[in-house]
Length: 119
Image 1 (cartoon, rainbow, N blue to C red):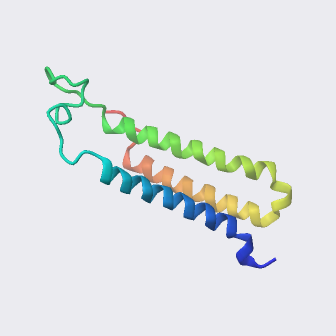
Image 2 (cartoon, rainbow, N blue to C red):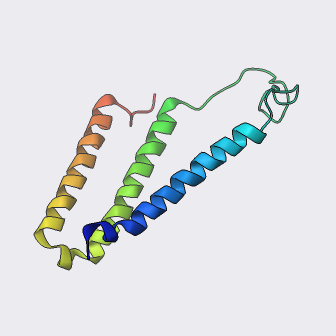
């Protein structure tokens, strides 16, 4: 079996995904409204004008949420390794160590920058 035929399904999948994205963008640009109306240009808060002072979440809230997602995804990537650790051998273990080390260095950087401190 040639190496190209092994990746043929992946290339078809990628071509279909890019085609759908381009098609959706073009159809939206052609069929969508060209200028905003009175209702479209109104404030986004339930269509009502804002009353009083607007308070926003602190940036630290979003940073901690992103860190949670990153480490949650790390666990999702570690699960397949845990299932097939015996067949991957030392090469798989080294890849796992590099992956975990890179995430740990990023975590130390975030800690050093003070993202985890609430003011």
